[in-house]
Length: 240
Image (cartoon, rainbow, N blue to C red; front, top):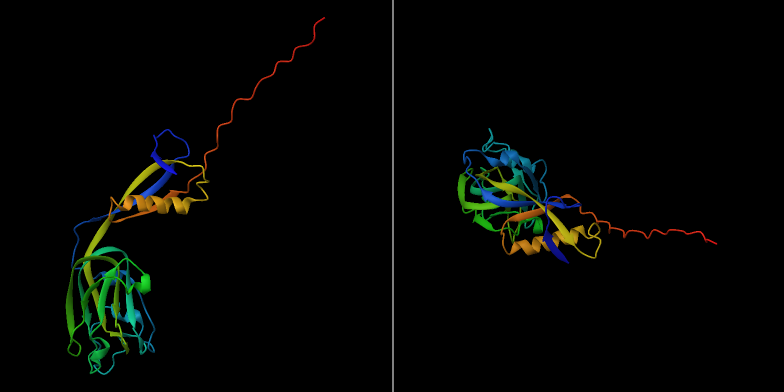
């Protein structure tokens, strides 16, 4: 299969969006967690995952910590924030529960990235929570790690995971859109093979562009072969 650029006047051109990563300045003062959605591996009673992004670090009663999120006691419990866009994360701030059960926060890995493999828990590590005091709020620097997902996971342990508040600060990673018009020379049905073609293009460009996504704006169509002119026959009457 061959790929070639085509001029603007060609018919049946294929349109793609090339999204390339470009970091732009932004404000670090905004808590990005408020924009996102959350989930966790399980939920203990009414300790919902969104309690960790409700803006409440400390409840009115130190003996009541139902304003926190918590999983059940399980192997490798995790909590995930989907920021719904791509950011360069500068800081993640976590507030521990205010009582004696600090083991439910201590030793958790903060992971940031764009992959949902293993529920996002395979993304790179920013930091590991370490020895918080009861109710303590600790800031962890992630040095501009790029990611849509922020995971907190307690690996290799059977435990609850409790988070009384998670705050995320960073800047938007601008995704520049570039439109390409292409014509494919191929013997296959390009409409039927659109997914495979997109994968081949993605692989070919990956050696030159490190951060991009491709998608169709219009699915490819197979161009009809031009028909040869039909012979015109002239009928002559026999002349005597």
